[in-house]
Length: 288
Image (cartoon, rainbow, N blue to C red; front, side, top):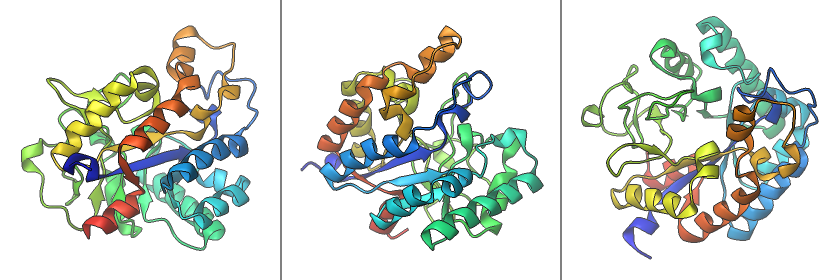
């Protein structure tokens, strides 16, 4: 095993109702949930590779599917918070976010017996105008966040944000790599980007479904050679072609569902090629 392949990367899944995705929530009419079967596809694949992941779980999902979330925790997967109602932070104020955080924490703790230590904002909606989220997370005794997408896209992202895990010291993520402090205290795990000559998102979602698996591998290998763990994210519903729905605008359908039938094979190939763990597992490996 090479030094690059020995780096433990972060594997995460956002456990949410598929129809609450930002591009779909206002246009979907058939809201049939497929959480049970979608999670089963994912966990069967993870079990084949003996890999544990972090499931950033919406509080409402934990309340509606307690057995699913409890089974994930019992199998050794980390359960973290993805908010309570899957509402982007830019649609909330600080007080409402604090209530959402408390509700999601209670929902997860009631199901798993443990309070979550990690958070990911719906739609990666932490940015300069929602930086108050870090104060709320710190006050609520969270240990890490994984909401920053370090490249600007049409929907989200922070240009120039650091690409490696780092300490959040009173909100310092909106600066360049050279200003990052040593990893300590409250941590940020930014989503993975490949940086050959410009930043290319490879973390998951639409980008993982669209890009060839060879590009994903090159991007992860490039980060690992620099000692940087790649933080990947997926949604269980992306592994279930039965969720594909009609009656939405072509561009929304393309972004939401393109490549869904090939994603399981891509993740299988990545699990064959690299070391993956939950966020908590990576923190423990590094002693952070």
